[in-house]
Image 1 (spheres, rainbow, N blue to C red):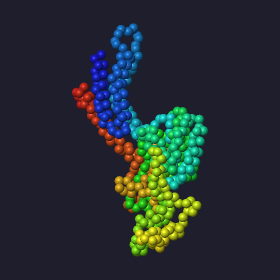
Image 2 (image 1 turned 180 degrees about the horizontal axis):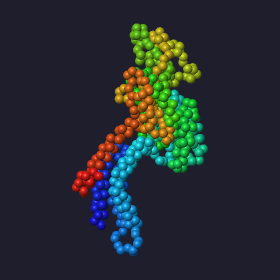
Image 3 (image 1 turned 120 degrees about the vertical axis):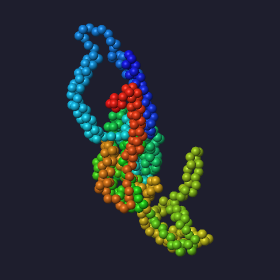
Image 4 (image 1 turned 90 degrees about the vertical axis):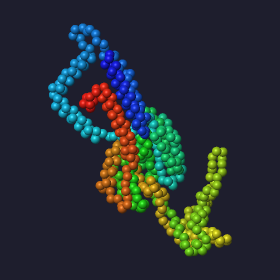
Length: 448
């Protein structure tokens, strides 16, 4: 009875130490760590002592030749223990061999810091080109919707076309709404059916439409992309060249899909270069030219009206019957001068030429940055793919001058999460060591 009381006391003290160390854990794993340690405390203090009293009965006279289950277990344990002491070096060798084998096996495991969400629910995201009209987005979304509703394992489908869903899960961040974006929240009959549907439709429907990418997304507790590779530099052409080389190599990997960058395709524009002498004589500036060109092309917001609680923009549009404007039409556009009653065609004060322009330039920490992102197919491991692609960047990829690289995504998230966890575990080991030292009063036994 005294030994059981001491056992309960020691377990209680060690559990308290683990709980205190668990508070050191920060980030998303803190709550999970506290819950696990709390459950361990309840098991050590309540469940295990109760089972000891039930399973190990008090000493009492037994009939000759009859042994209880605990007596048989103790006899086996005593014989095994005697054998290990008779063959000490063999026991130590087997122990070291088991450690070595476990280390080898650990390198073959698919490691992931944060698990997928086992839910009878998943999301579908549909991406089209930025200039896609809402009608075309709705047509693609309707095709995917009909396919999902035809599957008997799907209970309901909630659609968002041209907008994004509410944040129905803490770690799931919906995309920014736009006319080229649609999203579904799909509820299924079970968790197994969710995985079967993802395996069946994810690859088959990803590139079903030539102008759209359909992404079947399993809900995840990790709120960062799995694969991200960043390139930094001052020259946009060099950044695009480096990203294109990496994307060409990544698109050869069957484990990846939808390899893309956060830059959009360049758009055709009309570049207007003012003649500094002629324009200044008439008092025409770039701001004046831009305002006149905006009015001539239409689609200019001139105000707004309120309909109840909703603000509606008032837009000045160009007559669609006039058709699209050509480059010569832009040169013939009259530009008003600050001089009263004077307006001249744009071609007299400027050169109008076709050109290509970046529609979006991304900066990160004040530096120009282009990010290559890819989605993983189910059962593919982010750590292994990150390691493979990182080796390609270091050994095979020839980067332009002035371009540097950086790993992001799950790799960056892991290295931000691991140090606090390692710190918490280290503190817990120190606390446990001193509690054991107080009980045994010898450093050697405590180290063992």
